[in-house]
Amino acid sequence: MIKIIKKGMLLLLSYTPDQGPSWIRKRFQEAEDEDETISLKRTFSFQKQDLYVEPGAEVKPADTEQAPDEEEDDMEPTEIILGHLQEEYYKLNRRILGTEHDIFLHKDAKVDGKWFVSSQNISIFARFDRLVNADIYISGVHPNAIPEVVFKQLIAEFPGTVELRRYAAARVTTVIKEYVPLLKDFEEEYNRYMDKKASLTGENLEKIFKEYELEKYQNILAKLKKMLASEDGYTEKRWQQEILQILLLLNPRYIRAFSEVKIKGIETGEKRLDYLLVDANGYTDIVEIKKPMNKSIVSEKTYRNNFIPVKELSGTVMQLEKYLYCMNRWADQIEKSLTKRYQEELPENLKLKITNPRGIIMMGRENNLTEEQKADFEVIKRKYRNIADIVTYDNLMFRIDRIIEHIKRT
Image (cartoon, rainbow, N blue to C red; front, side, top):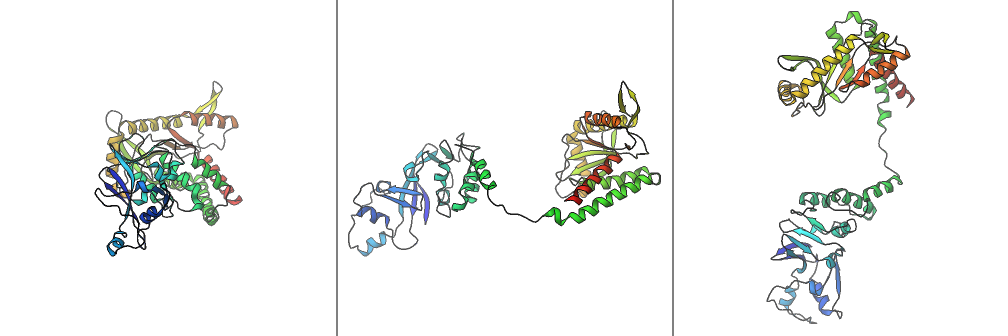
């Protein structure tokens, strides 16, 4: 068993064998070579000069026979001087650890044996040393110091088998490259190595949910076609609710939609959003839904050889741009207000966030457009910076149909 002890200006390694008396001092005493080196846990290589002796303690020569009290003394831990305190850091002995770079441990760090040796007797700092190109500092205020909490987390996850050596190098460098310059990118090397190996294969989720997904999109498409065929039977409000349901099914990133949302206007008064979309992280977008009423989305005639957006589209875009402007301008105030208002309808602790929200417009038809009109409509859609998408009902059906086709072919 090993322990790390701070004693005055010294950092000591205290070693007690799991069974039987300590053998280290006896081996040094019997050695003929003054430079006799002992290796411990494949991590520490030390000589007799590295042993710590309490000031004033008597060093006894090796005897063939020992008195009972001497045998009892031999059961005491062997202490090895690992490092000396220099200002704020203990500088470790490179010869003992077998490193080319110096290792510095902050004097207030809670050091233990796990900092040095993994569960599989792999030297932690020797492994680090082969990956870096500078001295290593743990904790403290040194510019390149690895925070103690980061280092502890790293060694807790330290791989211990030969089979995972490459992973160990990649895992270590992933963390310490933020603090110490590296010799090379071991993470990339590990990824290349793993690409050549057989990989685990999980369940084919696409296959498992294929029938469900196919049925889902077929039902959505059938419903949309039915709605368009009997559009006059829907009120504007009911139409919006039905289409919103479809949009949420097609965009699983959004977990909630709120209608008739009031926000602060540009100067005075309030603006009323049709629908506010909320994603899983609380970020918001706006959607405007209009009944198609068989209306085209671009002009029938050209203006200077270009097809231009119809007035309803231009007006909807302008309206949406104003909503987005107000949301960005009064973001903090609106976030707090809406979070409080809808708190009971949101997941626990989820706060609404306004960070460059985008607008979505659902309106119009394009089934009767020429290729030239469709091309100009694509230009129109792309020119509005804050509008994420302008979707016609025909294009929505086209997208769903393509999804169904893909599912059938997989």
